Length: 115
Length: 114
Image 1 (cartoon, rainbow over the protein chains, first blue to last red):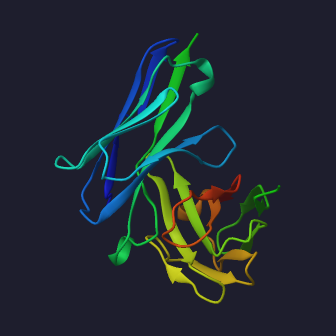
Image 2: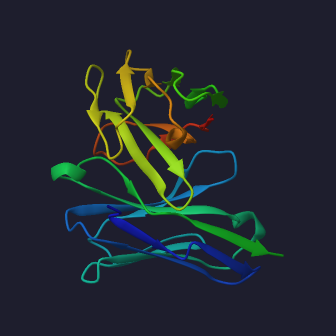
């Protein structure tokens, strides 16, 4: 049972373009939504995270948009650079119930930014 | 500043063999986790340890066992490896279960079962 669905599976963007990755979740108990970035041969690393009390969070070129009613959240990468080429995972966790403290990950998106 | 260290980095096993994946963290974190990563499946939680002395099953625990040896170390054991366990395994730690300052992941163990 995939509780967090991520799309697209792969994404190709030109340098300077906007990369957009979308995630949808089912569990209404989720209340923490991080994005992780993974380079080949490395473990995932936390990129940015949001809680549902805000609809948007921005850190540099990276922005999370959150739509609680639709149970969807997305990652926008502005001015995409070749160095952003990596696999991106959305994730979710809850502060109660069976999801407490444990991250459930989406399927991942392989981003390629062409120079 | 090693963070989370996993050994070995690569391993090839024959079906039915056993092995233990080692994980150690030096950040004084209380909680530790084992995930497996498969193409198109994301990362799935195998087992976790909220604190020293406790372990609990995650989403895909069948075929695995874990030991929280002390606060620093959390090992994953495959008693009788199967080809379906071919995967990349990641260990992670966090300061406290549910307190999200982010998980810190190791660099992974790539396991092939033939």
